[in-house]
Length: 328
View 1: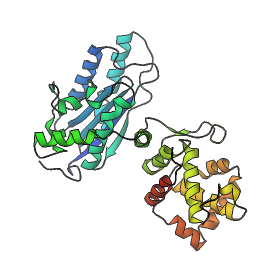
View 2 (view 1 turned 120 degrees about the horizontal axis):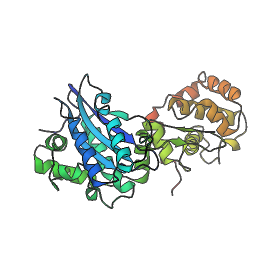
View 3 (view 1 turned 90 degrees about the vertical axis):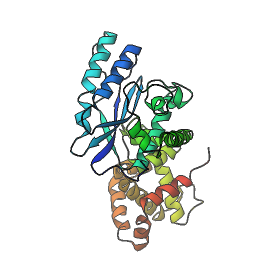
View 4 (view 1 turned 180 degrees about the vertical axis):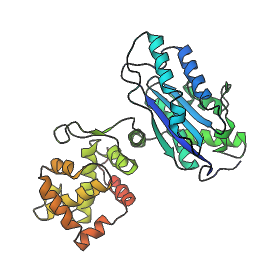
């Protein structure tokens, strides 16, 4: 049962998550926690559905579900969300909303990515301050997968298939993976890409701004100082200054026009391509008119040297920009 680089073609792995509204506790009693756990297991009893991992914390429910092609996360979620919400209301005797919106689902594109998701979910209770080590959290399938407790109806073998060719080998590999605690930046990037937190901007520059961001933009947001859209734009600004030959410049504001205007247009072009924010948001960030910035962005697309800069792979742009951040 060796590891593979992708999930079987006949199935897709999904990370399904619910978040509770502020003030709701999904684990208000051990009996409720056990009832929810059994519901998660029951939702995967149909043929070809596999629950690879589950995690319950007071404010979140996480599933790693492998579903046959043709089934969607909605098919699983509709047997869980409304019922669990009703149980929470009944247990506390408090009416009202339980979950902050509908469930969210993220396709996990390979077994390598699934192993990474295991690691991030293992450390989630620690990040939330619920325990000091991943194996200390009781409301998770991790302890059963590692052989530290009885499975209680949870099937561990398929999960272990991701990590090795035998149970001892797989458990050893899983222990080795979760031994590496995610860095603060890595943790925040994961939270952003999974919608656990939103990318925020300065209140004066990005009024009412709070938005989910994808992988590359999330890396910038997580690494920026300040940590948010403004910080991400500052990282892009430093990268652009380097490409324009002004590495030691304090910022684009220190460059006289038209070089400063050109740099701002390059930053805006990259921000839009990364889906970090709109050109209008970049204009507000720099305190410039959106129409003027848009004209400069159009000019960049026709200037060969700027096309070369903008033609840099976005993965490389982000990697190099993050590398330019000031040390803590």
